[in-house]
Length: 70
Image (cartoon, rainbow, N blue to C red; front, side, top):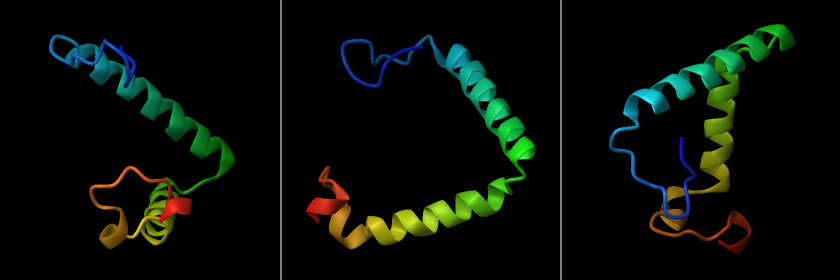
C-alpha cells in the first residue's frame, strides 16, 4: 500500500486496502505458526518480554537510538 518512508505516507483513502493487507499477512502468519507448531500467544508474550529487557522504557522513550547505543 505504501512504504513507511519516503513521500507516500498518507493513509487517508487507503484504510480498507491496508486492512485487507494486514489480514492477509496475519492469516499467513497463523498458518505458518500452525505448520511449525508454534504457540503464537506464547511467542508474542516471549518477544514482548525480550523487547522490554532490550529496550527498557526509562532509557528508550523518545529516542531512536539502537539498543547497542543505550
